[in-house]
Length: 355
Image 1 (cartoon, one colour):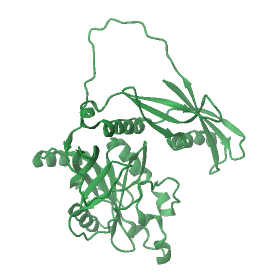
Image 2 (cartoon, rainbow, N blue to C red):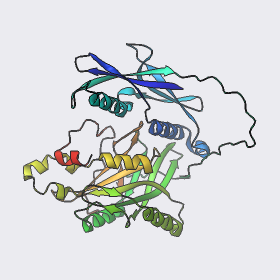
Image 3 (cartoon, one colour):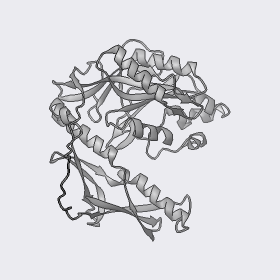
Image 4 (cartoon, rainbow, N blue to C red):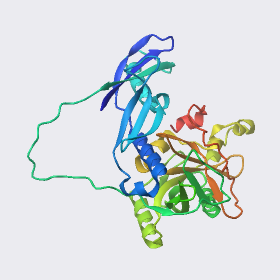
């Protein structure tokens, strides 16, 4: 176990101070489990929620206690090494906010940060006599056999995702019918293992429209009634499907209605993004590393356009997906570079107001 701290520096390198932080490692743990599952296949699915060890990777330049990244270990097996700059960005922003409040750092100023870690080995507790002994049971992840479609392109970095065209057309119709406000739903499907390729992929089979969700021009909120609808749909379908993500619409047509045409053409809203509210919703409701978020943008420039996001090394980023089936009325962008990320993208004023 380690205690983590953040050193905040001004742009010129002068030290502002240090804050103890508690990073949200849950997405990192989930991604380590998925990487282990992809490496070992269905045999590892029976105990998906196995413990994950997170160790600091020390900086080659500064040495211990300065952290360059994270190492994840599952069942004694090293799985991934993750860059600290991305993993600790949220903690750095949180720490800097406290220094801004105290007047030690100027608001909206550029700052640097260093991550440190210190071993936190607590002394063993004396044995106690308890009336009950508790033990955790392994939580399986359902995986079925399948074949990666020949018409789908390779997607070796991320776990592959298959979307049927008819599902996208349904989402287009629902988006247009709710034009002006956000709407959405839940994506159903299967985790599948291709024995020939020795790789996992996600087959999306259906979407369940969240009719009871509360949406306005800037955000969507799922309600308890939404989950009752999803549970009923799963029970009626009886196809062994799992919830593998969600979708929602962005009424960019309304957001950019007063902007000149040339500005709309360069607006980042037309490319699909996740707001801070969307990211929090995904982190809370869809924390599994294989879950995805599909954004349907009702573009001011024409048709509904799609972008997909998913967990990658503990961070939500834009990712690739594959569309199979007949012709579609929607604008499909299935050839998105898996390395493409929303990190560092400049936000327009409309987008900032939704964060």
